[in-house]
Image 1 (cartoon, rainbow, N blue to C red):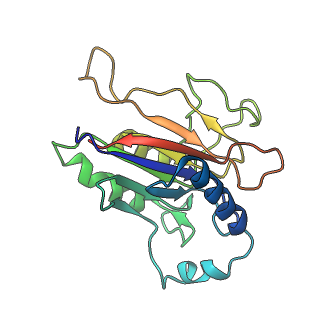
Image 2 (tube, rainbow, N blue to C red; image 1 turned 90 degrees about the vertical axis):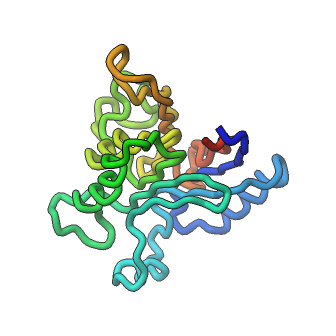
Image 3 (cartoon, rainbow, N blue to C red; image 1 turned 30 degrees about the vertical axis):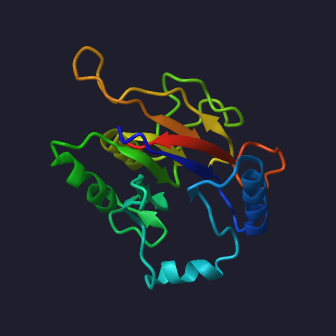
Length: 212
């Protein structure tokens, strides 16, 4: 452990409601002070796709990757929905995208995990052996198999996702097989609701993270 701590604010689907987001962020800062990083998951632009055109055309790239901030916070991200084919498009990711994230980790014997994983979709089966997400249809299977695989291999300390329109904080789960593998840190998955939702479901969480 480095002993250094960071304040991280994670937010759900913005859906183009930037003024509401900024007002919310400003209120949080006034109440609790400044934070180091703001992460947004899910649908960011909403129905106004003007700013999204450069991404769709390929002029601006950034579908997936790993990033380390100047403060040392390690973040992995994967944008879009899982494609049903291997071709995909600018708003969908494929098996090739997931492989590009996990292959460097698989071949690294010193890898212990990553601080934060942010994805658009939930991991498929995240509610298994856990409490159910309030507001989702009971028994409804949501999320992506590809995201599940990435979360399993990257072993994030925190995993944030959006799109389902509800707030869901899963009980922490282990990243090792009990009595078979060496103990590792747990992962905390948090699904965030949409900014400005009428039901006033939780759209953001503020975390204090101690760097490894």
